[in-house]
Image 1 (cartoon, rainbow, N blue to C red):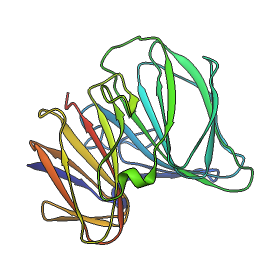
Image 2 (cartoon, rainbow, N blue to C red; image 1 turned 180 degrees about the vertical axis):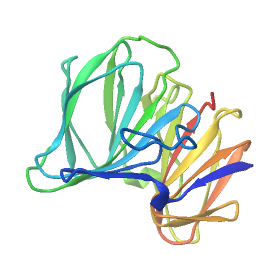
Image 3 (tube, rainbow, N blue to C red; image 1 turned 90 degrees about the vertical axis):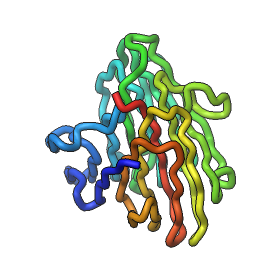
Image 4 (cartoon, rainbow, N blue to C red; image 1 turned 60 degrees about the vertical axis):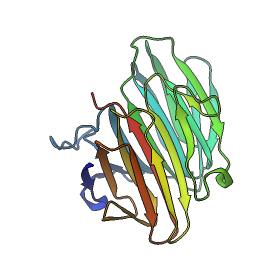
Length: 235
């Protein structure tokens, strides 16, 4: 097993008042040549958006964009006619494909929202833009792996890439094991909450570890924890 550790405090950070953002990889004004991506995972942003604020209409193309609200509600509107609100325990995916525009705003005028947004390079370029979202029951990830995004699992959201997003909520001193879908892939493990041990390494809230050259990964919760796993091709 080969691994790289990204500590929470080493992420890029930008506070614009209405937006408090942490970047796991180079993004906007944050650039770190050693952190431009993990395989085809290009962006992992941890955003807090104030009430009534958000991102105005802007374009995307040829990127798979996954949004995971941790608290609050996000209002989405795009040029293909989708107008939706996504909430905690829901996941949204947008295949920008040949191009579209969209906006994202906090659906509350008063309460902040905290969300994770991840960008993945697509497998096939210039496909027809596509949008989907789905509710995922927390009970289905209690001390086990819950698949959120997959190119082949009909119970997950489809993605235009050989990539798999999963979550697990793990009780203290409980182990869960993640088995890779594709042996040549790597896995980027992001600790949403809590503290976990992986291959002798301790990771706390918002720490991350990129793992390559492994078929299986055992995660042990040292306290009640929530983890996000992103399995992606490495090139």
